Image 1 (cartoon, rainbow, N blue to C red):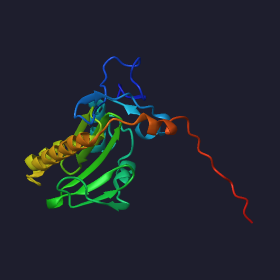
Image 2 (image 1 turned 120 degrees about the vertical axis):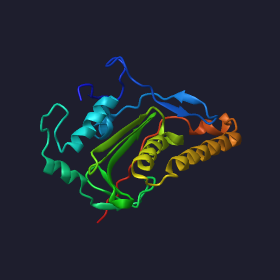
Image 3 (image 1 turned 45 degrees about the vertical axis):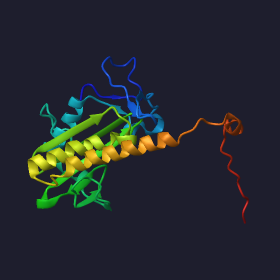
Image 4 (image 1 turned 60 degrees about the horizontal axis):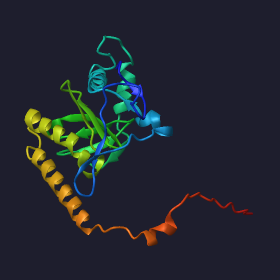
Length: 220
């Protein structure tokens, strides 16, 4: 992962980078400013290429061995990250159950097909990486589109295509994702029709700097 950086803003650090996008109320795609990472950088501040992310997924499939052949982490320690600890709603298309381990979701499908997955998002970007450990197969999906309104759908669309074409699981999944996208965009258009210019006389009293005041009580 030679191109990986812990950054909130790639400008001035690398030459080739994507700019985040989002839909405004009119359904127009607009650029989104790079979000500062701050204290949560360790959990989401990595800027990497698709090739680097693919290498990371390959390391998972190779049980801790990197694409260069080095054993970076033991297979036992890596496998411990996938051990489920908490059941979560089965939110991925076609899934029967989901659970959460140490940063990874374990997803079960029909036919004992198992997926290990992790997704994340930040302003203007959405990322999903996953692999089928019993099939030596993985995928990485990155989009320069904000989660709201529909940035989170395209990783699901890619996964649905893979499940349908490779495993015959939930063949209707890809179309369901497309239908969901159409519904979300229609909802956005509806909100735009309801929008009205702001009355500055009403909003002006609310403008300014805010400071959180915590009152300490002297109890017994």
